[in-house]
Length: 241
Image (tube, rainbow, N blue to C red; front, side, top):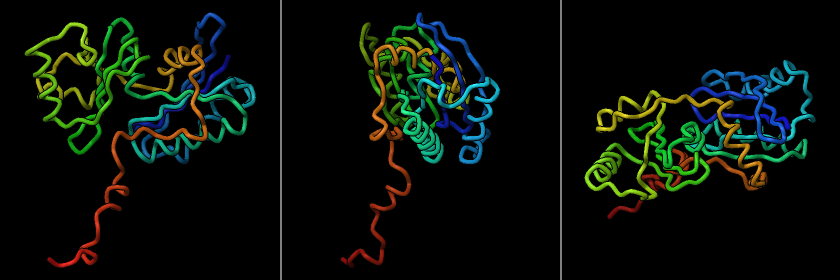
């Protein structure tokens, strides 16, 4: 089985190709990076380049994996639109994964993993996962203040087996400094690429946990500026009091 993965959730993106045998053993077939702010121009050429390198036609792909967020609004829309189009054109299934879950899956030995990403504006995408990313216990958007309260609560009253208490923390490098200021210095630094999605994607495939392409949308964890501003009435429309 050959699967193509697309990750455009971060500042940089990537596409990757891998092959699984019936026992789940994976053979990487390449990964192509996508520079910052180049997703719309580079994604389809990168996919074509990767297929050509492996002498594979698009019809030979058995399925697609896409990282559906959280992350950049524009990047997610580019990646999801491309994968949905390819899936509809080929009739192949799609597996949609959380970027936080993929980060958690990179620490399979830990019973519960906290994953953190920089959400900008002094906020953080926060998730706690069990079963190596397979089960989400919590996913939320947190500020530095709420994260500090979470860490303090865990330290003051540890609760073994609590589904919302992590055994280890993983984060991208941009978040580690902020975590140290919040008293959480034991974070494991990870950098997610499209090639990292395949172990978790294989488990989804075995469970037939495929996305409904017609309903598939990005996981932003918060509203876009356009959505927020649309709800703020213009001053000219607000009656005087």
